[in-house]
Length: 117
Image (cartoon, rainbow, N blue to C red):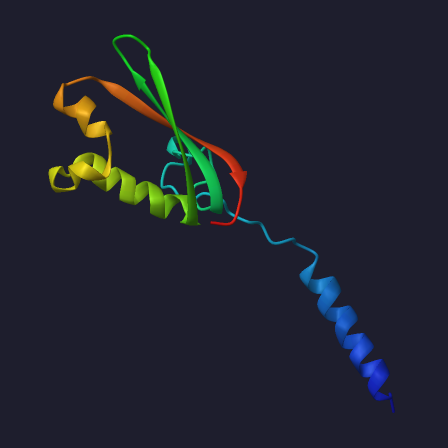
């Protein structure tokens, strides 16, 4: 009969070898169309520093904003997108100045680094 040490060792060996055959893949994007991810495939990353670059179409002038989020970027992006689109949240973002003057613009997002909020 096997002693307890042998039983535990055999169990640990079994667990370590069967679970490591296929390493867990960390999915960093849950967008329906991953090629349209706002953060280049990293939208579900959390605790990040990100940059939003706003480009005005008529003169290609760029302005940047650096932000920090403890939640996932997607959660923050959804809140920002809501403030971009709903007039009752117009004071939450300065992009409404561009919208009010009918200035066409694009916003490009970029992951700067991981950090704790």
